Structure formats: structure tokens, C-alpha cells
Image (cartoon, rainbow, N blue to C red; front, side, top):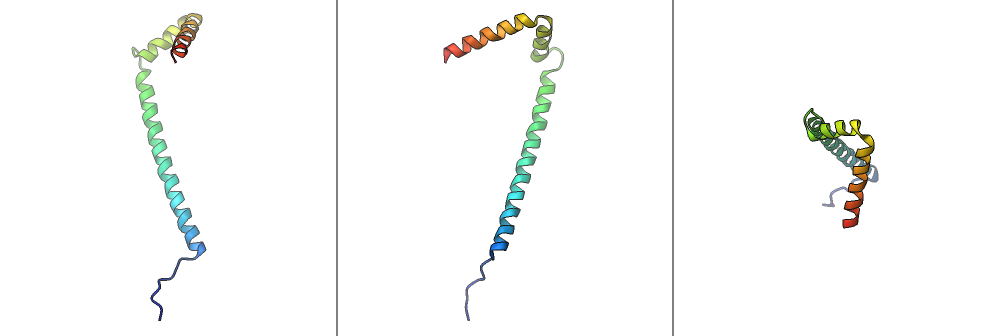
Length: 82
């Protein structure tokens, strides 16, 4: 009489692995969806009238060439520091 426990077959191990992977994918998907919802809410909050993003958008619409020049100069100044 043997006291060894039966080992799972290759098919059972494959099913267990696939189940674990599908759970992990589901958890990651849920976390990404939650992060996306939070990001959308943050963007919507920043874009409300009177907020900095709304002001920047209005300035850019009024003077696009000036805004582009300022952005370019800011990029040059930041890149030279590094």
C-alpha cells in the first residue's frame, strides 16, 4: 500500500495555469479600467472653466503662433538644463 498522493496530470496543471492567468488578466483589466475612470475624472476636473487647462486652451486658441513659440522656448530651456 502506497502513501503517496497522486500527482496532477499535465492537462490538470495546464487548466490550473490557464485559470490563474485568466484571473490575473481580469484583475489587471479591472485595475486599468479603474485607473482610466480616475484619469477621465481628473481631466474633466482640470478642464472646467476657470481652471489652468481651460485658460491655457483659450490662450492657445487666441494666439496659436505665440503659444507654439513659448512652448518651443520652454522645451529648449528645459532640455539644456539636463
